[in-house]
Length: 171
Image 1 (cartoon, rainbow, N blue to C red):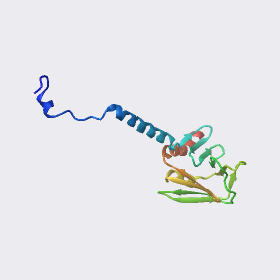
Image 2: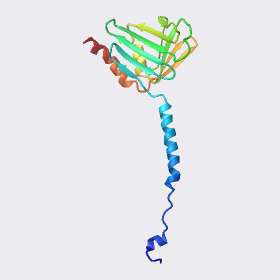
Image 3: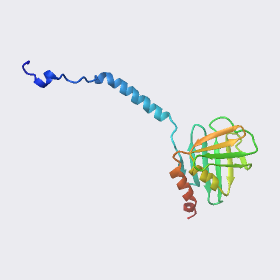
Image 4: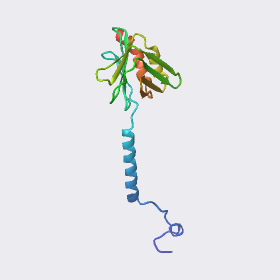
């Protein structure tokens, strides 16, 4: 045995360890790539606001959807705005909700904004729309040959606050 060494080391050489210098750039590149992918992905961003009126919103690559309730005039509205392009000119607007409680609704009481990017429907009763949003995973806004899919992931807390809002605003 060589002086200054131990029998254990002489019999069992040290395990091979990958050079940290060679692994670091790989890990750095992978972590950076993952961070960019996560940041570039659309996030579930349903938001609620009670001021000045009850408002539920979500902005995605497909569209911006805004649901409002004004307790002063007891009127609901839903507006779907395209990021680009225009809604088709058609007599009937529909919304379809897909997953646990599928439902489809339609109306001819819609209006299109002057630039053609937004469609709005107003009504005093919105139970089907609110149930469709709350109890399903996807919504589809449909007018003529234009269909926009809306992800409902993460809407739970915002829709609960929206449903509770009219009572809070009337107090």
